[in-house]
Amino acid sequence: MQFGPLFTAMAVLLGCSAFFSGSEVALFYLGREDRRAMRKGTAAQRLAADLLKAPRRLLTAILFWNLLINITYFAIASIISIRLKNAGQHTELGVVSVGSLLVLILIGEVLPKNLAVLHPRLLSQLVSVPLTAAVRTLDPLMPTLHWMHRVSRRTLFPHFEAEAYLELGDLERAITLSTTDKTLANQERNVLQNIVTLSDLRVDELMRPRPHYQSFRPPVSLADLEGRLPPSGYMLVTEPDSDEVAAAIPILHLSDVPTKHLEQVAQQVIYVPWCTSVAAALDELQRQERHVAAVVNEHGETIGILTDEDILETVFHRPSSRSERMLQTPSMSSLPDGVWEVTGMTTVRRLSKQLKLQLPASKAVTVSGVLQEQLQRLPAAGDVVEWGGLKISVVAAPERGLLKAHVQRVGSDQTGALQ
View (cartoon, rainbow, N blue to C red):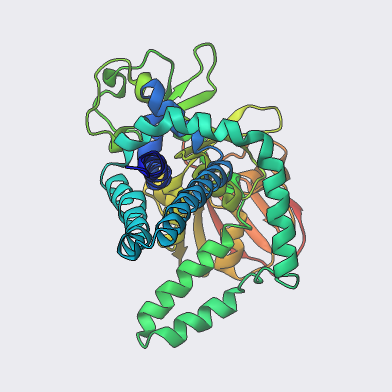
């Protein structure tokens, strides 16, 4: 009975240790969909989602409080052990020494973490309020803790350097050495090459241009689709007073599609400039946990959209082109006598790669853009342009539709409009 207050204090500290251990696992075990749903949930769920916006701050606070609690717990256990030793109660001393450690491991660590893995969303909202208070209490010490972390890292690991980025050739050799299946190795090499290409590919080369997607002003109902799925798989919602894309409804990913007011289940899009790389756009989509990016020009106007499905198809399906994705039409097809039939949406990069020809620098990224740049007007059927060693003959140029042209090599390398 003389140790009653000390055992009570240890029990309280044990509960606090279990709280922080379970909180850490519950919050960091939440998946992307869980976090997205909790941002629109109850006040406690929103609070838990807000904590994860600064994961480093959250983890530092949890580890600090857990360490402080455990040190205090063992300090009290040591006081009890010393008193028992002085009283000559060696059996009780052994029970307290071993028992305090086992109890902390089982009740303070193992049990709460197992429960957190089984019910992360439930526990996250239950601990959100006290955990937010604990994190905010530690905010004044955060700069000092971060400074101590940097100093200790530079002191203990002064010559520690980040590993250099692997080159594509290193990855190819690793794949070749890891498999004897040449077909599989070639497929994996192509995927790696496509991933690396994302850093050089601009979003305006991969985006769905404005005429090739549907957008609707709110309020939006299922009847607006007229029984047809959007080509991109997303129902795009504009601003109430303009045609600028503001949100996207993932029709194919909804288990229950409401018939009216679909804008309530829409997800905000991100905005990227036309000149940014596809790799940068993909990073931003993943960071903000979005699926659609609206591509804007220098005037801030939406000129197209880019979905994560478009990017994944570019990586895993080769050859891939916008014509094939949106119009189910090959962007390039071979004709007799060395002639290629191309669509206006065919990119200059793809044309250069297919024909193995170094084409001149141009602001235009598509065949249609090159024709407009050379002709200084909209192309019409019958127009012929020589550009970069190629002869481009316009076969069809409807006002609203798919431009088609024939491309073939010419002997000279002159650049200019012939007609």
